[in-house]
Image (cartoon, rainbow, N blue to C red; front, side):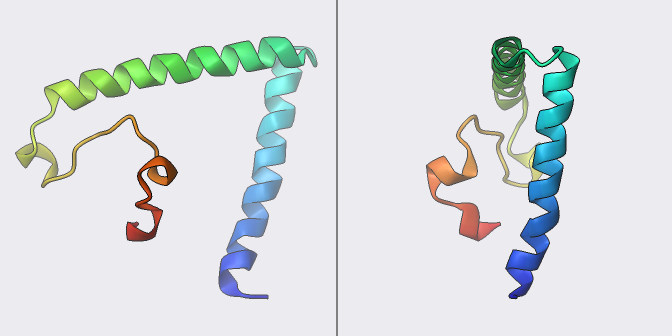
Length: 79
């Protein structure tokens, strides 16, 4: 098995554990879980927008925060 696939296996288990934890937090209610996760995403996007406005390029050596995800920009290979 290639190294990239071996590294991905623990992430799948972690993702399932995170899903189970989120569902158990909401007593197994998937609708409440999704609502909470969407609210969290909205809050984090707002905070990222504020960080994007307030940070200068020199502060981060050329990196700027962005609300677009890596796969939306097509720059995942650059990481």
